[in-house]
Image 1 (cartoon, rainbow, N blue to C red):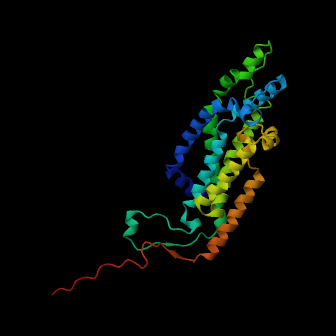
Image 2 (image 1 turned 90 degrees about the horizontal axis):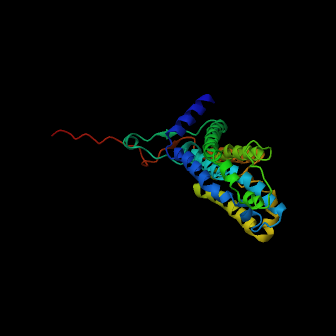
Image 3 (image 1 turned 45 degrees about the horizontal axis):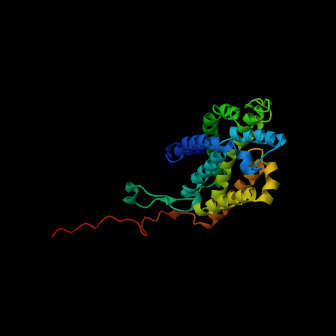
Length: 289
């Protein structure tokens, strides 16, 4: 298992596209701060009037501000987990792109992995580690600025005109840090979900549909006046609503493992790399006259 983990870590280090994700996630977190400052008006109620409604908006927005960008980090982690599976010819059954030296060499033979379970577990461990990195990148960019955004929240300005003082909620508050911790823990869990979905569906377009459709449905339910009234009270923060449970991540992973075993069982024991249909043969020597 340690050898597989080292192999996957080396593959992750060589994947330049994935290393663009941490700075992009940090940028997404910074960009989400201004939106989450008014998250209550968008997701719960657009015109809070009473003091109780404004106080509820303040507490809601504080959690949303501290978790800014973690929803994007979760989606990025899911994409990274799917990438680790779908780029791998061992698990997909599709040949990898060959380099130029491979084109002039005899076709390589690619036997299936003897234990796909251990192979997928190694990928899940590496994907979860990368998910932790994404969460750290987001929180490192967002948390230093969160107190300033909370201090300038519109509810604090509104109630200050009525001589009511609201303390600035910070990360150490008991109502804030559990939400941030749960939202951050969802990032590596989404990486494992990406591993399971890719192993189960074996196509990028299928994984994309499986992710986009529930997101669109969730946005519709939130925006609809009837469904929004039902779902908004159960939304402690924007990112926290996207957390899959550990049991859900395990179920998706096991489904992907079962699909991988079935797919490999149906594949031939030895698959030649289809650069050409037959083996490359050296040119015949010309006979001397």
